[in-house]
Length: 167
Figure 1 (cartoon, rainbow, N blue to C red):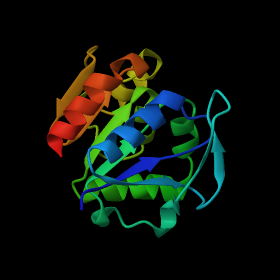
Figure 2: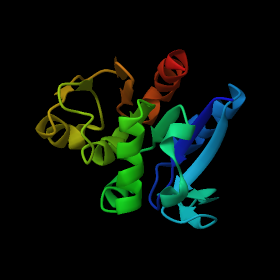
Figure 3: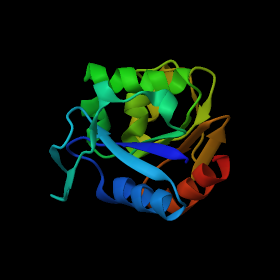
């Protein structure tokens, strides 16, 4: 069975988490919501509450095919949490498809994935993305190898279409 990790942290952008979460299930994937803590409630920018399934430190990325990083304020918090950064790097090292939208690039900057890649993100993260060695493209979706990136919630249909193509 194809499996996906969707990362979860307080301040996530509601649609950037829920749209991929349900779309991946609809496509037949087993989807785990992974956060710093298992079975904890995390709250979105708009007060939506979602319970995590697993703690990042207990997840082996090699058991999965895809890592999704929703945007919002969550990625800035994720990037300073060692278990989350370690999981993201493990996903990169294991060749998972990495799908990052909006501010999700803030977590990717902590990995060695972006050097020499073409990518996009929310406009306020552009300089950080470029400083991490990526070439910024202002497009709905950018696919470079196993990396899929998009700019904002309006890009979700294209983001998920390309992510599912890679699977």
